[in-house]
Length: 119
Image 1 (cartoon, rainbow, N blue to C red):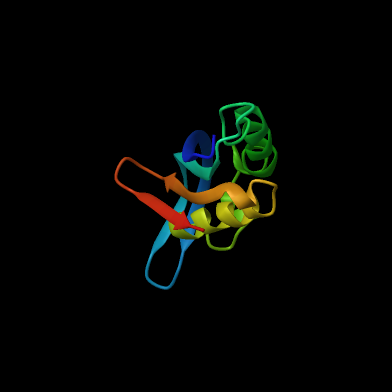
Image 2: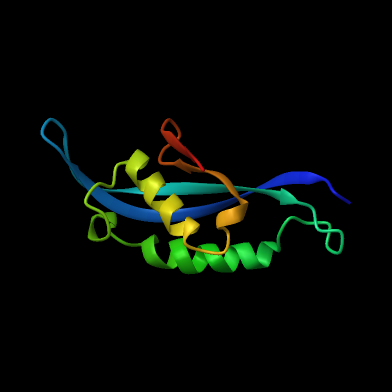
């Protein structure tokens, strides 16, 4: 089997942050983020999958969830607006063995706000 495919996995991240810049100040507030990670690759003939979902979940839990879930994002990043945060998550994931599989990540901050970073 030499087919290529994608898989998108979603993870909830509940965190808080405050936003401060010269024209826009928001005090500490929280979001129930939804991080969607889209991976691409060859379907492995022995498994019928691109990559083990268990492996992906373990890596995401270690590199993203355990670090950010339930925490103040400003502790980790000076700029924690959605577009910056999505970039930080991409950077974190690209330091793992998922790097060659990553196509994009999407970070939904609210029902109306979402941010996409393409690799």
